[in-house]
Amino acid sequence: AQSVTQPDIHITVSEGASLELRCNYSYGATPYLFWYVQSPGQGLQLLLKYFSGDTLVQGIKGFEAEFKRSQSSFNLRKPSVHWSDAAEYFCAARGGGGADGLTFGKGTHLIIQP
Amino acid sequence: GAGVSQTPSNKVTEKGKYVELRCDPISGHTALYWYRQSLGQGPEFLIYFQGTGAADDSGLPNDRFFAVRPEGSVSTLKIQRTERGDSAVYLCASSLFGGANTGELFFGEGSRLTVL
Image 1: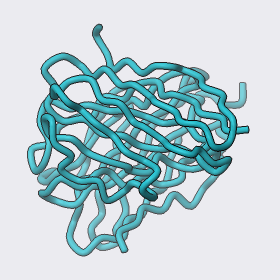
Image 2: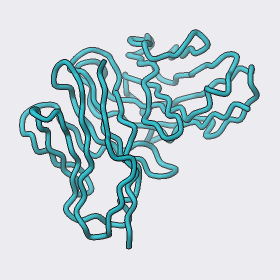
Image 3: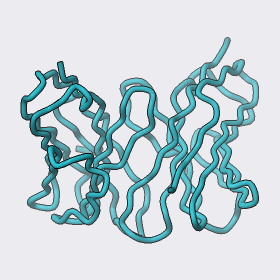
Image 4: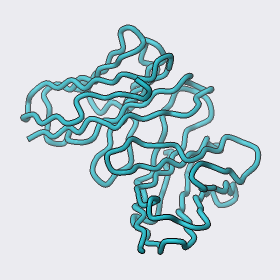
């Protein structure tokens, strides 16, 4: 079955430190991959997406993600976090083609320490 | 409006009652999706509309759940004989295109359903 795994339920990072959130997928073929952020009282916002081509993808708010086929991973990174980055982060995948919806991971809750 | 609008933002109902949740997508978006997000979980796909038709309803948990989009714009998710396990945030998303050309999905803030 298709699945997306985010191994870390909570991550605590000091403000100004670097961040990496892990995401692994299990699909028959390379799916389309996405990272979303969800802040309290707000809808899910797309940070970045990978369809094909360059495996390092740049997104909004200074985030980037790297697709690694050999590891079935799509980890999200940011060189220096800000207090406003505290939120829930979701990795999602979608099979290439067709009308099927996104499969989301369970999310990683990011806490920023001052 | 500029974004995806969902009403009500909060709904409290009693077990066994009927509930309707409404989604108003971004104008011109042909694809519309419903997801359900339970506490501590990621969103789970329920149903996808391309225009007026349900192109993929494989995520609906059982026949108590039904959704319509009669004019290809506003959609209503209908839940009959609600159960406590239906308590969740119901998210709606829309995109300009669907299927293989799916671009970014724009999500609403969700409707929080609590079944007592």
